Length: 407
Image (tube, rainbow, N blue to C red; front, side, top):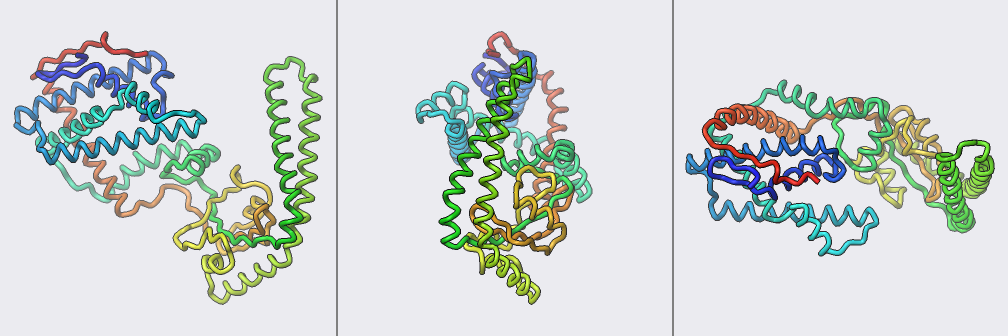
C-alpha cells in the first residue's frame, strides 16, 4: 500500500504507473529526469491519488460508486483500445528509431512500465467517477461567446505565439515536419500550388546519369562536412583543418558543376513548359481556376482537390531550396504564376493561391464547442478542488513514500 484514503487503498504499482505516465505525456523519459523533478511529479501524483480516494469514498456513501454491467463493458472496450494504441505507438517508435523488436518485447516493456490493460481500465473508471462527482456537486453553465474567445486566446493561442512568433525554424520543424498542431501562424506565409510538367523521354534519358552523379556527390559533400565538423570539435590549431576544408570545398565545387550540367539538360524542356504556362494563364483569364488546371494538365494531381489550400511558403523558410525557393519568393501576391522551374521530377509552374493570415486560427463551430466544454470542465474542477479540502478532514489519509521507486 502506497496510499490509503478511508477504506480504499492504492498499491505502489498504480502510483508508479501514474508517475511514469505523467512524464510520458510531457514527452520525457522518466529515467532521464533529475531527482528533484521525479519528486515533484511524485508529490503531484500522490495528491491525484488522494483525490481519487476521496471521490471513491464520497460516491460509495451516495450509492453511486459501482458500475453496471453495460458500463463496465464500455469501459473494458475503451481500455482495450487505449492499450492497443499505446502498444502500436511504442512499436512504431522503436521501428522508426531503427530498433528491431519483437511483439513479445514490446508487450514486456509495456508490462514493465505498468502499461497493462488493468491500469487503463482503472484510469477510465477514475475519470468516470470524477464526472459523477461533477454532476452531484458542481454546477454547469453555458459560456458566452466572449468567454470562449478569451479562453481560446489564453489557453491555446498565447503559448504557441510565444513559442513560434520569433522562431520560424522551430515552427516548421514541429508543425510541418512532425505534424504537431499549432493554433498560431507566424507572419509572412504564402500558399503555393503547382502544376508539374513531365520531361520528354529524351530529356529524362540524358538527365538520368547526371542525376545519379549529382546524388552521389551530395553524399560526398555531406560526408566531407561531417568529417570537418567532427575534427573542428576537438582540434586546438585550426590550421590543421585546412586539408579538410579544401576537401569540403572541392566536393562542393564538383556538386555545383554537375548541377549546372543537369540544369542545362533539363532546360531543353523549357519551350513546351513555357507554352503550357501561357495556355494556363490565358484560360484562367477566361475563368478557369488553377485547381482545374491541375486536374487537366498535372499527371500527379497533387492539388486537384479544391479543398487543399496549398503548401505554405515563407521567405525565411529552410524547407524550400534551390529553384523552387527562388520561384516561390517571386510570387508575392495571390494569383501570380511563375515561369517554369526545372526540378528533378519535372518542370514546376508555381501559383500563389493566397496569403496565410498571421495570428490565431479561426475556430470551427465544433472546435468552439470543444473550448466551451473545457471552460465548464475547468470551472467544475476548481469547485471540486475546494470540496476536496473539506473532504480531507472527513477521512483518514495515509501515504508511504518509502515504498515508491524513483529510479
